[in-house]
Length: 182
Image (cartoon, rainbow, N blue to C red; front, top):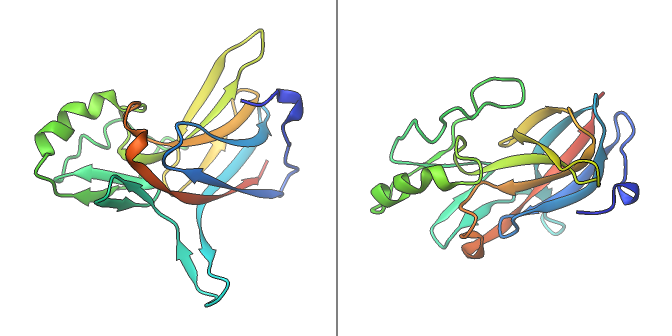
């Protein structure tokens, strides 16, 4: 985490882009969010310079699962959505459904995810305030898009919702557009 004085603060209607790597437990933005502000976050496609076509960036959970910011769930399980609410208090978007021979094992590990109430590989945003006086954070499930109403001052960052000890088999990146709207 960067020194709070070294972070960039967006002006109203200004936007910035960051890459969120699936392999990283913490993807720093170097952007300061201040209490009372509001931000629109959305996963964006990137443009191929040669073909001028937009391609969606994806995350990979191991060699066989490729998803976007809405993540994945196993074998029709509604539990993978659990109490995962987006920043406006609505039920999170439906993740991609995966069928696996390891369903039982995967279901047993659900509660050990960094954000247990959200699907595997769901995009989660975090505002961290690590000043000497405070070590607070605000966690916001985002999926492919969301709005953050900022409750604390701090640096914005993101992660793919996975087991803390399993980031080593992840790959890929999502491109995020961060726009200050209030």
